[in-house]
Image 1 (cartoon, rainbow, N blue to C red):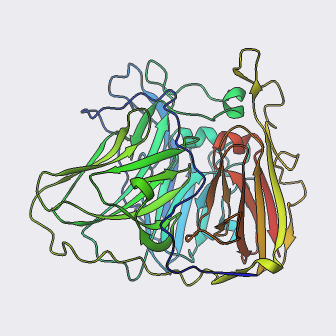
Image 2 (cartoon, rainbow, N blue to C red):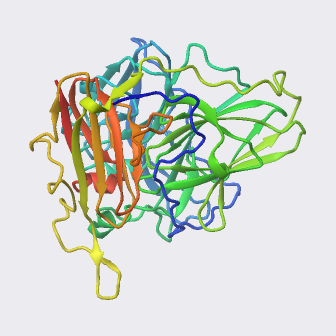
Image 3 (cartoon, rainbow, N blue to C red):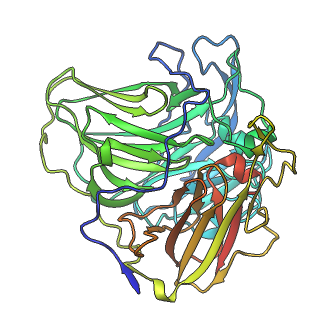
Length: 477
């Protein structure tokens, strides 16, 4: 059968995510604090390259901390500067590594040319300390994309220390808005003194991953407060830069509409029960109108414990001119395939196993190889190992993602946009994704057209799991 776009789409958003538990996160309160340098648009050098220098900085992430945390930042900013180009323009970024670890930059969600995908050890050599690497590509799609380090066996620490940023590819015909905010949610594992907790715990990688106990938005403690005009049309680009924490977010006193998922536009729809799952690496573009009265408030809340406000919106000033205009969708992405011929698809199982087991008292334990904690189809990820499959360019592919572990598994497919299939009837959900969350001991089906040549990774977006084997790769020839 051929699977074609469904129109109009369902308002049901099923990505398989489950709300994260409160764990060790304490509810962060709004309070004055010394703020880290905040993200802004990156400056270009004289030759047109945007220079991104990754280097250590010291700061107090928690305002009452006795000690400073040693973070790593792009150009001294947490998160890094927001990189903006118009659709059709070229991204030219020169990464300079002034940290003590090898680095690379993955552009999550960009259907990139393979050599620029930024998987250190697979698509490029990692950038050694003191060295640089030039990324040059033209994104085929407009959208919101996450920039994060992705070196085989060495991604968790650079990301947890703060090396993340957003790439915004602006539409040439974007809907009319009054305010736009690009926000990165992150969590940090801090010790009692406020310094970053130690890295490299195998049990942490074998269980939930590195869950932080201090939430930030754009590097600052939450809630992140922004001011908008009464009745203003607001576009919120929201991304999850956490190493491991899957969030469920709720909209309080805001009637939000989803305009794009993982960077790809969809017909605008209201989230079911005003909540959305947000996996590590996931992104949403959201549209909403501010209340007409000045002094009104709304919030985006993380459903952790009783709820932690991440972003607080306050109306002030004169009313916006375009108040109450119809909520328009983002322009359709005509670069994506209009159909996927499932009857001709190459089909493969992707069986996820590994992780910690129960100890005598029920607590998680792990005593195996700390570099091979997780497996796909019985093997930990290896650039020198065999490909999961090889297909000719343009071939349809269906993957059966079988999570045989007791934890939710967020899985990211590189270089392609995918559809989440309905297991019962082979229909599909009405949006494109690059990251899917597979509930524990469940199976999800995804489909895509392998239209991008090269060696492409399929990775856990929980970076501690990626570092310890939860990835594989396929090749498009």
